[in-house]
Image 1: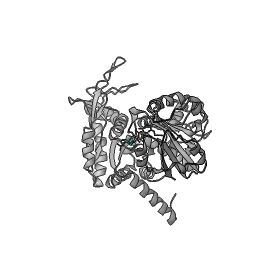
Image 2: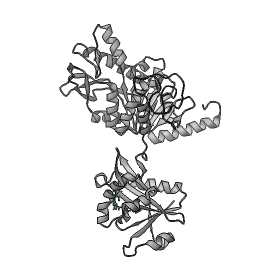
Image 3: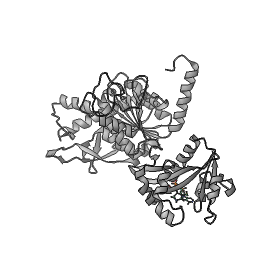
Image 4: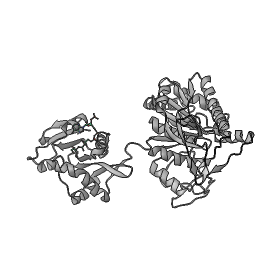
Amino acid sequence: MYEGKPWSRVALIREAFHYQSRFEGSTMVFKINFPVTEDPAFPYLVKDLALLAQTGFRVVIVPGAKEWIDSVLNEYGIVSSYTSSGRITTATAIPFVEMAAFHVAARFMTGLAGSRVDAVIGNFVRARGMGVIEGTDMEHTGAVDKILTDSLTRALDQGMVPILPCIGYSPAGKPYNVPSDEIALAAAAALGAVKLFFVSLDGALRADAYWLPQGIELGEDGRVVRLTPAEAEAVLRSNPAEQTGPAGSGSPACPAGDRRPGRSLEELALALKASRSGVERVHLVNGREDGAILKELFSNMGSGTMLYSDEYESIRALRSRDIPVILRLMDPLVRQGILIKRSAEQILEKKEDFAVFEIDGSIHACGALHEWGEDQGEIAAIATDPLYADMGMGRRIVGYLIDRARKKGLSRVFVLTTHTQDWFEFLGFRELNVESLPEKRRKLYNRSRRSKVFALDL
Ligand SMILES: CC(C)(COP(=O)(O)OP(=O)(O)OC[C@H]1O[C@@H](n2cnc3c(N)ncnc32)[C@H](O)[C@@H]1OP(=O)(O)O)[C@@H](O)C(=O)NCCC(=O)NCCS
């Protein structure tokens, strides 16, 4: 894409620096499926991970080992049976499962050592047994009880790359075989990772393999470049895992082609889960593709599929059915004289001006931007649910409204406040006199309320 033209190489370098400075020092979890470990491209992949660790990223590796475990058990003649809840790991099997899991982890260790990066394979996962499920004793098959973040953080602070094999231990030291997807998800959430990568042989979600809702961004190579959680949900709804052809109500982005089920959908479901637990960016990349992780990290178009939940995503326009909720949010503030009273009808009339902050489907803050002519807009009705105070929601909703004002081409936003001047000053607003208000607003200014005017020039 960048070959040959010096100016475009410069663009690539600039882009790489931009992402480098943005994510340096942040934690990234890489779940790498077993077949990738066996691929000829694997040594290059590990070198890229080493490069990331050397340049200041906090890299955590979760190797998948399922197929290798299967082949080891097979080799030793140990029957391995599965239920819908996963593999039943018998007391006979568990030592072999441990051996296989640590063998795969050691492959990463060896590769990193070759790049002079310190790595540590550790017991970072506390596990509990799955017990008896629908009459079947799962024996040594376990689930994540807790990620031991203190130990992991210590290792990361020392510049090491922790490797988490698919084995966890109970507090009494009993080993359990824990699905590595689950470990990756739990580790990313527990460490507050900014990114979680699923590296497999499937990689990106391909437009010719699935039904996609309209409007999804596709790369020139026919890959889904990025998705919001809502879009990911729509893809999962329209492509039931077991089916191979088009289905559901979604319209195909690419009507014909080789549609096939794959690990990508499974990974998309996991990505959605990770995003719901707070991981802002989850990437599906192909471990066979040279430099796939670096391209995905350091360029806008990437090389895989990214599921992202940016910070504005949870701020959206007001819908009529939200009005009772925001009236309830504002009511105590109205009673304290902090906000002026508004009726449902008044809000409905100005519905387009309002925005709400939604977390997990429920509204916890609101605000509005009213235009008064003379290129000025009023930020008003800012209210945060007290249970969610000091979480940055007030700041973000004001930021969102300022952005909206900029997009509308306004040159100033102002606020009339009786109680909250310090906060607006902290946000960069400065006090002006009432005369600076646009004429229409000045005429409505309630002198008995004696609100102060704070403004921000855009
Ligand atoms: C002001 C308000 C919107 C802040 O919401 P929030 O989501 O808690 O705000 P943020 O998390 O973005 O910011 C919190 C910071 O602001 C500070 N802060 C909150 N209210 C403040 C106030 N009235 N004056 C000064 N600082 C204030 C907090 O102490 C906190 O500081 P810190 O992070 O440095 O410790 C919220 O307190 C509120 O709903 N107030 C009543 C309504 C109101 O005054 N609206 C404005 C008039 S339109």
